[in-house]
Length: 360
Ligand SMILES: Nc1ncnc2c1ncn2[C@@H]1O[C@H](COP(=O)(O)OP(=O)(O)O)[C@@H](O)[C@H]1O
Ligand SMILES: [Mg+2]
Image (tube, rainbow, N blue to C red; front, side, top):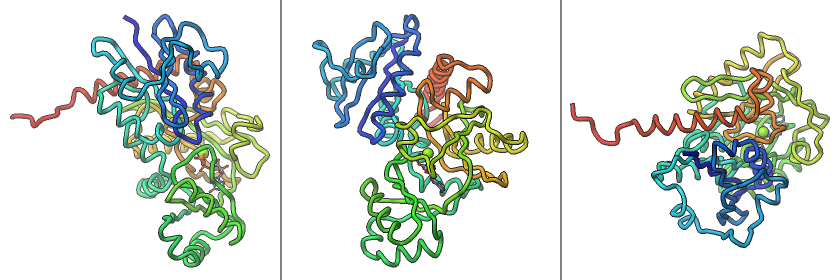
């Protein structure tokens, strides 16, 4: 019997469109002789749309959004009661970036339903999306990183000047202001003075009630792709060559300005240490399936972890699959296959645990 695979994408997230790009590649890479592929589109307002079983390859992204006459929009309840029959082999592949997908919310739903799914669980997803909690954990695990501080909306509203003074004393300029829980560089600004800082903080608070301010790190931006469950493996290091001061949304998705170089131009010594730190980070954050660890590397060859992505960009041209291709020749389709296997293994492992007290 073929496995049913439900590829869930879109979602109530600022990274909705990026998710569509990733889903397009994932869906086309799945072997249709082996899997019954069901694309499941979540609209920007959170409606779940059942596109139906896919018969052919998808030619254009808009097909993943089109609702044909026999394709209805479902409430979540209707959708779930229609699918996931217990006597069939099912797995969900959430190809969702950012809020309501990469943050543990949807993973919690799958856990409650006891459905196998690809990638990180509730805890690592929730920690990975929150830059403040993530960085607090990095501090505990002695992962090298930039100096940072965080502010909550309430304290900024009640003591604005004190907040600016505190940032200037602890972090100084230039600094980066970011909402705690977004991705794709949305709401992120570099500030060189108090005027810019005020504007940046105001903007970041539009997206989140908690924000983070970091010292600027000057260096090349590098990434490592980690896959596995109990024995994670790290890819070689890759880097992006770019002209801009920072990788904003346009640089990442619009201008096609980023040129990947794999392996990155680094000594073996530093790249091996970075790979060890990537594994350490994976374990520290309780990851499973996959994670992408992002770094800054200075001209003096000092490296700092910037962040993790628990569901990194996954188009056929994304860094994550490209890193594995260069590491051991794993193709895009093979990588997807490995992630599906890891998802089933994790599910089996969780289901082998006791849910009541063991009578000795
Ligand atoms: N502390 C920093 N120093 C220098 N550049 C930074 C810093 N933090 C972020 N940036 C720039 O902003 C980009 C986006 O920030 P990041 O923390 O990775 O957020 P996102 O989750 O949106 O990818 C980074 O890729 C980098 O170009
Ligand atoms: Mg980033």
